[in-house]
Length: 454
Ligand SMILES: C[S@@+](CC[C@H](N)C(=O)[O-])C[C@H]1O[C@@H](n2cnc3c(N)ncnc32)[C@H](O)[C@@H]1O
Image (cartoon, rainbow, N blue to C red; front, side, top):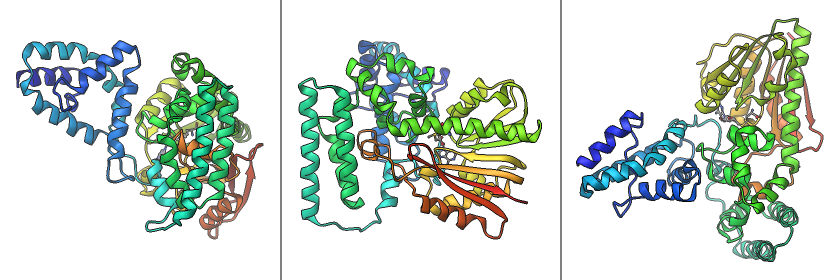
C-alpha cells in the first residue's frame, strides 16, 4: 500500500486527490504507458487522457447526464488497490513518469462537471432524439446503404494510399456522406455512422486537428468553445495545427473553410455587429446577455466594448474552462463571465435583471423544441421593451452534415425556416413582438430574431 499512499499524497499536493492512478490488467499500468508514451512521442498527454476519458464516457449509461470523472475515478481507485503489489522503488519511478499524466489531468479538471441534461450535447443523446426507440428499418435497404457507404469509403482509402490530393478526397467524401444521409431514413443513417467511424479510412481524416478535436471531445462533450477556435483560426489552437502532419494540415485547410465554418465565422461577426448597433442605439446604457458564450470571440472585434459604450455584458456558459477564459480575456471590461446553464435559467436560478439584447449561438442546435421554447420564453422575459432576442441554428441546408456526424462525431439538430418559426410561435404567446427568420449568406445557419415591442 505504501506506493499507493505515496502516489495519493502526491496527487493531493497537486490538487488531484480524486485521481490516483488508472487501472490496468497489468499493474505496470496504463498510467506509465499513458505518461510514458506521451513523453516518448512528445504528444500532448492531455490528448491521450482525453481519449481514455472518451472511451469511459461511451460506456456511461445515461447520455443526458455525463459525469466524465466518475468512471475514471472508479477506474483510478481500482488501480489504487492493484498497486499494492508494486514495490516502493517501482512506485518512485511511476511517480516520476506520471508527472505528465498529472499535469494532463490537472489541465483536464474541467471534465469534472455535469452536463445539465437540457442540451443534447453528446452524439448518443442526439441520436436517441432523432430516432425514436424501437424504430425498425428494412434489412435490405440497410444492406444497400451499407454497400454504398463501403464503396465511398473504399475509394477514399484508395485515394489516400495513392497520395491523391487531400482536398479532393475530403470534398468527395463529404458529398457522398451528405447524399447517403439525405437518401436513407435517419434510422438507417444512424447505423451507418459507426461503420464509417470504424473504417480504416477514418485514421486519415483524424489527422486533421479540427476533425480530431471534434471526434475525441477533450472537454467531454460536442461543440466546445475550443473546437470553435479551430473555425475562428484563433491562436489558442495554433499548437495543434502546427503539430499536425502535412496531410492533417491539408485537410484542415479544407475543413476550416468548409461552408459550415464560413457560416460560423459570419455568425460571430453578425453578433459583434448586433452588439455594436444596440450599444449605439442605447447611448451607453446597453445591457447584453450571451447564453452559451463559449470563449465569447465576438467580443474581440466589438468597437462599443473597446470604447466602453456598453454598460453590462453578461456571458454565461456551463463549461468552467470557457468561463475562466472569458474572465481572463476580458478582465477590466464590463463583461461578467457567469458559470451557469440552460437548466439554471429555466429553473429561475439566475436573476440577471433585464437586457437590451439577449442572444445564443451554438446552443439551440443541441436543444429539442420543448426546451428551445421554454428557453426562448425565459429570454423574452429578460428583455427590456424594444429589446431583441436572437438565436442561431445550423440549417437543414448544410452540406457537410454527413462528414460532421461520422468522422467528427459531431451531431447537431439542424433546423429549417419552418422549425425556427415553430419555436418562435410556440414561445411568444400574447406578447406583442416582431419576429423574423433569416438565413446567413450561404444558408448554413438560420437565425430567429424576436423584438419585444413593449
Ligand atoms: C458551439 S459552442 C458556441 C460558443 C459561442 N457561442 C460561439 O458561437 O463561438 C457551444 C457552447 O454552448 C455551451 N453549452 C452547451 N450546452 C449548454 C447548457 N445547457 N447551458 C449552458 N451552456 C451550454 C458549451 O459549453 C459551449 O461553450
